[in-house]
Length: 110
Picture 1 (cartoon, rainbow, N blue to C red):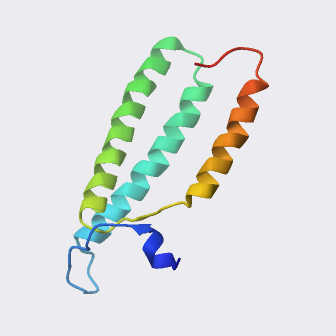
Picture 2: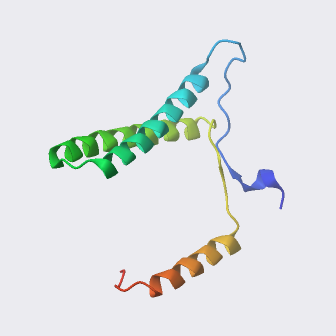
């Protein structure tokens, strides 16, 4: 199976190829920023000792995460973001591996 057949991507929306930033460039930059912000808020949530601060950070984290997802969806829709389809055998191997881990936990996971 060749690599291009494993790619899940919509047809790419054409944009002008110029030295200036275009819509794709702006969206890609914003998506990278939102990913960075989400990761940073996640660290802040782990370190917050004040409950009120934690709740405020959690709200902003959720808004940032939603924005990131919306940007991803827009880029995917326009064919500017693709994902690789994993082979079924590797998915099954990972499933079996983590099912084995689950049986080692001291409590039951539904």
